[in-house]
Each structure stands twice: as structure tokens, then as C-alpha cells.
Amino acid sequence: MTEIFLVRHGRTADNTARRFQGHTDTELDDVGRGQAEILAGRLMTFDIDALYSSDLARARQTAEPIGRGLGLETVARRDLREIDVGSAAGLTKEELNQRHPAIFGDGWPGVAFPGGESYEQMSARVTAAVRTVAAAHPGQRVAIVSHGGAIRGAIAGLVAIPIRSLAGLVVVNTSITRILIDPSGAARLHSINDSAHLEEWAEEFATRALSEAVG
Image (cartoon, rainbow, N blue to C red):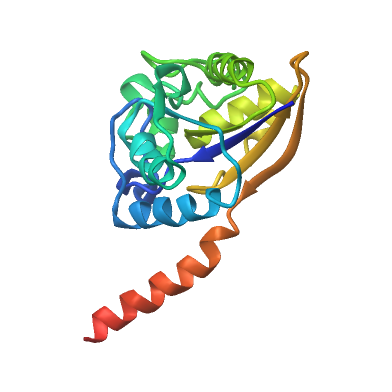
């Protein structure tokens, strides 16, 4: 049985602005870097055997402190990227709906972004990538740093849940979703969107920010 830890990258400026990033190579902001460090501390409590990430900067930057803490090299894979939103990169959902209303219309999740992928295509891509990684690490624990949409797509594909049913699932930055995959390829969802490690950090961060503002 292989246990996969699907981890969303830390926060970026586009996350805060609620803009589609897709394959745009955005980097973590200050909060995102702090989230990545505390995430690394959390993952050190598990016996992680291998570390993978999307090849986009925000995922690789999140994986860096994890690799340092665990003494693992990060294997970057293009097929673990977020959905390709094509020319919609940088738009808010409101702007997207005005320009391309069909994407989230009746045909969703089968309608592709202009110049990009559909959610169904992304789900198939990421699911295949996770299965490939799992097959390379039988009986081990593997951390994969990816993206919110990609993690929803992987859950849908691996556990056979319609991706439409996961449309309302918010995958929190640096949250952990654990999936067990047996040698036959059957998968079970162990836990989803675990962000308990952020609670103490968020309070500490807010206290520090207030102190710096007063000082």
C-alpha cells in the first residue's frame, strides 16, 4: 500500500487577488513562504520516503523546505501542474464568466479554457501522474506538492468521485490530503484538506505582524 500526501503550494499574490494562475510561473509571497516552513515541520513527523512537486515555481518553493527537513531531493514533474487556463491566466472568475461564460456553464467540467485544458482533461492528466508516482514507490509514503485544482482533480480520478461534486471544495494553501493506493490501483481517501499545522502559525504570524506595526 502506497500512501500519497497531496500538498497544495503556499500562498501567492494571485491567490490573494483570486486570479486564475494556471501554468503561469508565479512565486510564493511572504505568507506563502512562512506556510511552507511550518508545513515542512509538520511533514517531518511522518516517515516520508520520496518528494515530488509540480515544476511550477510556487510548488517547487513549497517543496524546498520540505526537502531540507526530510533530507530528500525534490523530483519536479510537469504533469503535476495546475490546470492550463490558457489565455484566461490572470483573470478573476467574474472576469472569466463575462468573457467566456461557457466554461462554467452547463458543459462544465468538459469545456476547455481558451487555449488550455478542461477540468476533465486536467483530472485525467494529474490522476495518471499520481498513479505513476505511486507505482514507483510501492509500500512507501510519498509527498506530492501540487495545486488546488490539480488536487481536486486527483481526488476525483483516484477515488472515482465526479469532479463536479468537488467544485465547492476549497483546498487550503499547504493543506494535506492523504490517499492510500494499493498494488491493484484501488484508492481510498484517508483524509482531506488537513491544515491543522497552520492554526498555531497563523496566530503567531498575526501577533508578530501586530507587534511590528506597533513598533
